[in-house]
Length: 330
Ligand SMILES: [Zn+2]
Image (tube, rainbow, N blue to C red; front, top):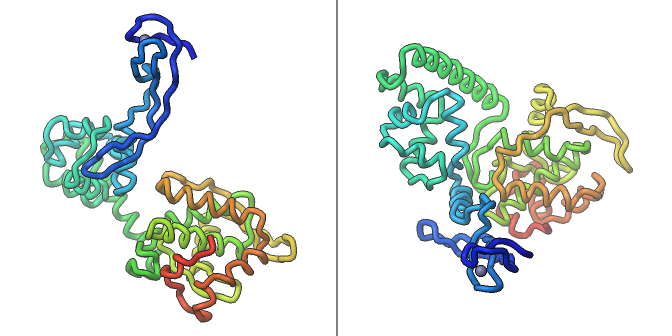
């Protein structure tokens, strides 16, 4: 292609070079795809001035993703949600003047700052910060926020209580893929698989394969759900309650349908899934599982799952250990 070479200062023949570069972020090597141009007449290498892709920025993003850290826009969105200025947020957290602004603009946050931010994002903690440093906010704003945060906290608490009563509570272990049950992820994974309609018995297997496949590849499940050995194959241990909750919330609806050789409850999507809850690896696995089984009937995926060691080595009613994921057929 032809373009302007900044060294020759005129139009020359340019070669687009794409390669993977190692970038070191806090003693970790991160591979980043970089693109640049090379002038064929003088050999000068230079970046596309119109491109907004910064390799270091990409490396930081990947690093944050791997370590479950917040991305710059998450930090900004949180601050804006409460209409706090960068300066106010900085002072609430007790940070130096430009710290928050640097993070919102892409600097990599240090670990103590990441933890402090995470904590501040919980309504009850932000409330404490605001109450502990009353001079940071103008009075009217302070009162408004305090009321908002108290209401938000009450709402989370009562919802948590209802869900805990309904679904029970368990710690992360090999039975949950070393994650605590994340209902938001579980529900949105259901919504993802319901797109286009899916029979309940197939849906149970899709969830099982998504969680177990993610555990196989990344040593942690996606949703923290536990799976039980039931006659139709593996299924989330409280699937009846999970699906009932989604129906009650108006996020999916059920139709009695005949599909292939199965008569069953078909789940239809009402509300679009929220993909922002999932990491890149989780989205990849969800898509892989959906694609792999797209032409499987409920009967075929049931037979397929019956052949898993996770199923054959467990007894009816057992909770299936994620340790079996290493021998998953997928
Ligand atoms: Zn040149």
